[in-house]
Structure formats: structure tokens, C-alpha cells
Amino acid sequence: MTTKSSKKVSSKDSIGIPVSVKIREKLVKAKQRFHANDNISEFLEPGDQDLLLSEVAEKMKGVLESLVIDTVSDHNTQDTARRVAKMFLKEVFAGRYEEMPRITDFPNVSHLNELMVIGPITVRSACSHHLCPIMGKVWIGVLPNKDSNLIGLSKYSRIAEWIMSRPQIQEEAVIQLADILEEKIKPIGLAVVMDADHFCMQWRGVKDADSKMLNSVMRGLFLKDFNLRREFLSFLGSRYK
Image (cartoon, rainbow, N blue to C red; front, side, top):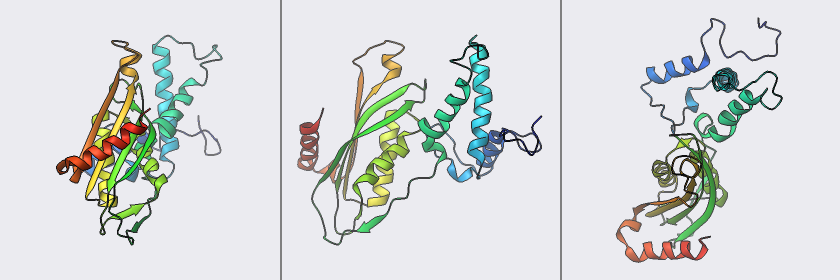
């Protein structure tokens, strides 16, 4: 039995309610969606992530046992359940549980109005259907005007990582990324292109090692101005590797 002096983190509170249940109840009460690719950080209290880690580790151990994997005498799997729980909560799906990184924007005092292309940004995610890896690259095209905000170059990578670090499908991921960039920068034109390998196609199912997915989101002048769109895609093509 865990006592107050024990260093072990229990996955339940003092009246035995799992922390995941408490978080889910808050989400439902607020009528807040909690799909796989949603961020739920505002509904977590300090210490909840550690409680979730312990809860997930307990359940992951049960999954391993149901797969008839020895987690007692096999030295390779004795701590696998906790490693996997930590990987999901702190790394692969961290974008669900952590607040969006702080993004400082500043006014376009020089009235920049030329196309900017950022990328390739390496991104890592996981398919929400099978939790298999998605590994790819993202390119971003921004056309600002005098009323637009500007953000630092590294912030594009931070936002992309935050969006991708959750169970995703690629079609929705690029829309989420475009929505946030459009809100933060307020450009008159925005383009996002993602090219990725999907291990749910390569590792299982058809097992096609060459299968990729390429998709894009175009906003503002990128939808209306063919020459602008062509200029962006030509920059992308010249650096496409």
C-alpha cells in the first residue's frame, strides 16, 4: 500500500479516482472535444502528467501481459510499460498535454511584402489509426503585408513540432498548422505543404516501402494568384530532397 511518505506516484487520487477519469469529466462538463489530435493542456493540473504516466504504465503492462510477453523475468521488458508510457506522454504525444510554446510576434515595421519560404522542417508524428510513426518534412510559404505580424524563424519549427506531436492524420495536421500560423501572423497569403512516410503503410498492411503522402493547404492569395503559387512551389521544388 502506498503511504504519504512513499515516493511512488499513484495513478489515483485519495478517493481512488483515476486521474484520466477526472480530466475526462472536466472536458465533458466544459463540452470540450478531446479527439486524438486535440490539445487538452488547459484541463490538466500540476502533477497530472505524472499521475497519467503511472496510470498508462499500469495499463500498458496489462497489454504486454495479454500479448503473453514476460515482464517479470525478461530483463528487456521489465520496465517497458513505463518507458512506453513516458514516450507517449512526454515525447510522441506531448502536443496533447503541453501548452503551445510561447510565440513572440512583432509588427512588420519594414512593411515586408515579399514571399517567404520556410523549410524543409523535419516533423515526426503518429498515425491515429494504428499509432505507427509518420516521418516527414513541411514547407511553409508566407506572404505578409504591412498589417501582418512576424515571428522568429525557429518558431515555425516549434509550432510544427507541437502540432505534430499527437496522434494525427496528415490531412488534418496541415490544416491545424495553417490555422495557427494564420491566426498568429495574419498574412495575406499562406501555404503549407507536407511530404511524409507513413509506417502504417510501410510496416503493416500492404507493406509498401515506397509509399508516401504529399498534401497542401493554400490560403488567401495563394488560392487566387497562380503566379504566387507557382513561385512558392518552384522554391519548394528546388530544395526538395
